[in-house]
Length: 191
Ligand SMILES: [Fe+2]
Ligand SMILES: [Fe+2]
Image (tube, rainbow, N blue to C red; front, side, top):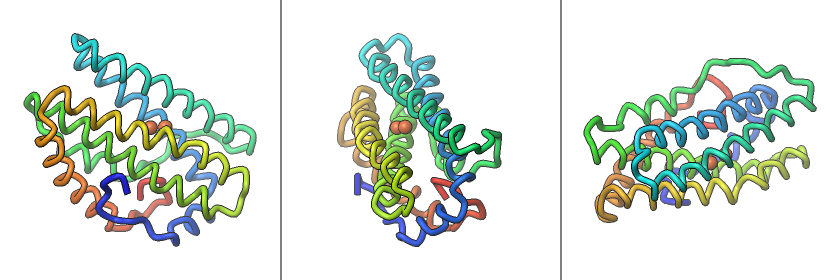
């Protein structure tokens, strides 16, 4: 799905259901980080007006998602707090190269992969969560994650040719699947 090299087992949803509060807090942090990722890219490539306009849209949408999940957390009486993160994002980030345009390419591809995995898992949550309100919440977020995935891949093509984007996507998608294949100790959206 969306170029991912592995499929999340539906048993992952059971784990989410056993730790809903913790996963919702993780989700809020993920949306905040997604906004931060796009904002950091604006700072890095601010002279690229064509790139910046798309990134602004992503920042706005991710912040809306952040506020949405904060609202859900508040209504459920869950305390929003800092919590240990899964290693997923950090481990993917270690593969971002340091010289341009490889760096821009890798940042876009890593972001595209994270969006794709979120989308894949939101579909599972939409289809299998027993709590109808939460299932509807995740269903409402599927489209935007799929769109962000496509958008980051198109942004990558503003920096390097399409063939280079495809090649790097294949490499990093394989890596992404291998990172998730090692089960993380914490109940998280990306673990
Ligand atoms: Fe989002
Ligand atoms: Fe997103």
